[in-house]
Length: 173
Image (cartoon, rainbow, N blue to C red):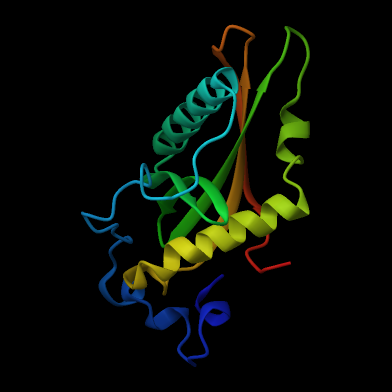
């Protein structure tokens, strides 16, 4: 979903606002962080919802500690939900967070990383496009799709985080 795939213009990435002024993308005030913006209610069970929210909070803190800036959380639209939208340097990063609660000794993180189905990828891509279409000032930036897997104990405590940058392509399947 880089500039070239988003419009029919002939300008390349080097003509992006970031390349001109050397500043990172800025999420304008008044556009919210996604809470309450969408029309789609969250239909997860309360326990799964709490676990997912906790995993998303751990993932956001993990990414911020690595220098990412979180632009939006839990963006909902008719295509689905975007867990996190972040900025890393010159790139926008759409992050799908996968939570796994495993007993001691088990690991579901690798499975969590690979559990983003083609249908889910398509929904994430469509939702990201929807979000970016409403933010013309961000359209020039390249977009990457990451997966962050969060391993939680059965009590909901953080055990481990795995980050897979560029986990899937940004082009519509």
